[in-house]
Image (cartoon, rainbow, N blue to C red; front, side, top):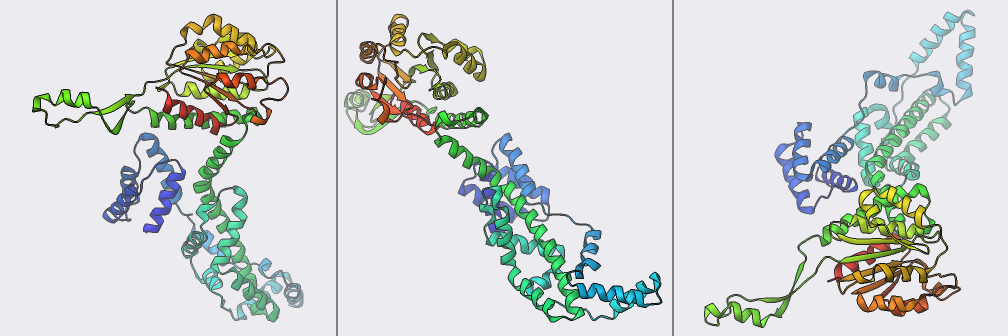
Length: 482
């Protein structure tokens, strides 16, 4: 049962319920105490041990019901499984001809033919299968079959299924593990024998084999929705993190937005703790002497040097022209998702003229603010020199040694005046100037790109064209900004 519980914990983790190894051991102890007789009692007990909040409890209930539910069957289904029909032996034309011949030979009447056929079938001795799977299918109960299917599924690791197209693969693996090869050989041998009892048994085995295949296929499908639904989602999220944002289609924006919020939540969890770090090993001599004067110079209260990390003050300038609009969209989304730990974000958008959109994001939902920003500032011809001049005229006085300036753009200036001296002035006044360029470094000096002039005026220049890059930049910003 411990193996079953471990598999259940894997399913919970796939459903984004965090279960630690210690909690898994607690759950095992819990199962030993409460037992397995009362399903509802076991469910509530495990829920108390493995789920920590209302959202996790809801996901736990769904996962428990899926994982520990088996197909119910009715007596009629069992009866249907044991019935013989003419179709079971229809694979051999000789048997059908014999039946029809007997019917026509018994007084020429329909009723007489049926009676004669039934009496002949009753006189035929019934054979028993010799293969292990054949014995299970003919003599075993549906419960026995489900247990064997579950054991085979565990043996072939069906819980590792990732995509729906693997359903047929795992169905075949489970059938092979249960002994399909031996069953097929027995069916072929019976068909080649030529006797009527052998043909009846082969038809029966084939029918049971097809029924088993359907049961296994249903079982694999349920395992897919239990394990691979979230695994597939995680796989899609990993792919979306790495794909170039410029290649995303509009239908992917919602999925990417969810990924951004998850990444932001992760960063919040890391950086929202008390924002003071202590550098153990660096003794603060003055504070130590001052605090220990009351002890006649004995060092009872040791003081260590510490550096306080403040929340960063960020100014974000985004090029929203067509070539880089997607990058800007998700950078702004990222920054505003981190409002808990970056409360002082001022956002600016431009193609040529620079405009502040901070209040727009504060008073509108994210999607509306994005759309309005792209509409108002995304239609002009790109002019970085004009943007820098506007920034100097309206915002330079607000820049100080605690300000981090993030510029996201490809630095393609249509051969206009780059005005890099203004960026040098920003460099001198700000704590950090970070330039995020979605193009590869090999393109930074090609054509009308001005990165060769802008890069010396920045503390940091990075290629940034995916969510992974954005996460890395923002995480480093939170770590190093003081």
